[in-house]
Amino acid sequence: MINETIFRVHQNPLLYQYLKYHSYWYKMLYRNPNLLNDMVNEMKEEYKLTTKDKIDSICKKMNFISNLLGVFG
Image (tube, rainbow, N blue to C red; front, side, top):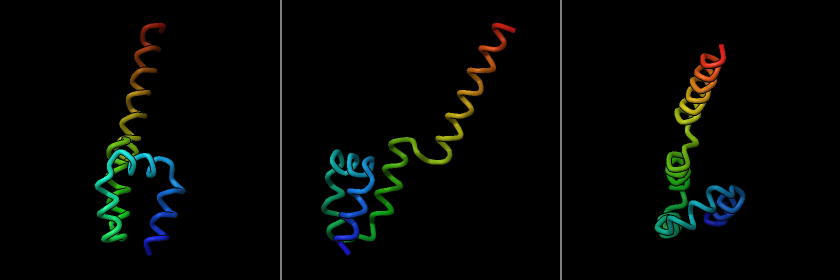
């Protein structure tokens, strides 16, 4: 099971980078490899990769374009 966890971490560059900066996850994953999904969720929240963050980003871009068109229109 630990080999699968290592393989999955190395396949995702963002997850690997997150693990390097948050080394406490090494111990947690070694003791319980099933916590990988928790680490992935925490990484997504920190790097703003959740669905909510993506929607917010799109809304900000649309507001910017709307304001830009309002200035020229």
